[in-house]
Length: 265
Figure 1 (spheres, rainbow, N blue to C red):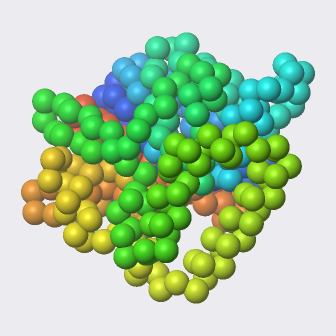
Figure 2 (figure 1 turned 135 degrees about the horizontal axis):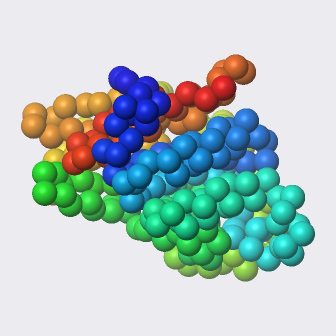
Figure 3 (figure 1 turned 90 degrees about the vertical axis):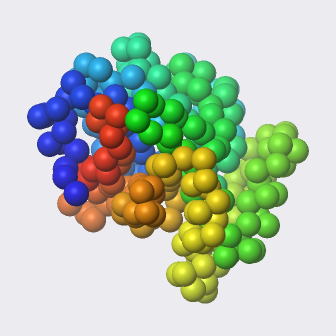
């Protein structure tokens, strides 16, 4: 797997789109935030880039757009999200479309947050058709069907009524619920066999019936899998080893989709 910087420096004009997922940004991850802003600044230098896709879990335990959008300008200026919003706006002003898909950790994102950086909230699965490929984008958690308890939880949090009710709750109560969900999630993960938290082969086959490339994140198991003539590309989560930030991102180079290593620091 080649480094993203290799493509940025040797083939900048060929990069048409960039795909990232599972950044899990929050006030507790300033180094990840800095690394993401650095990537966004690099993307401004790609002359033919037309799209940036954020494929879920861009934000961690997002409590609702109003936690940012209802702030005064002075409050926004010191908010941890502000440098990201500013960098995304700079991309949008360069005529780069920013498309945002919800994940399981930021399922409360609405179009109102995307409006702050001229982005578009997209639903999954999201198709991209080129003259060469039919590509299906999704976060990836819907493919983990062996984890039946998680799928029940997923059905609840993705119901429009759930989002509507949660958005009406006082922020303090939303914070308490988010903490409870996070604690329960960590407990569940530590007691579940790793296999059931990965994708189910039958679910993957079903998802790939109408595409020849499936691109997703969620599992934190970056790789390129070959299914006959079809390909499944898994994006990586963003990791901080104390010295560097590491991630695996997707690059549309011409009409070919590549998985590339991103490193910062």
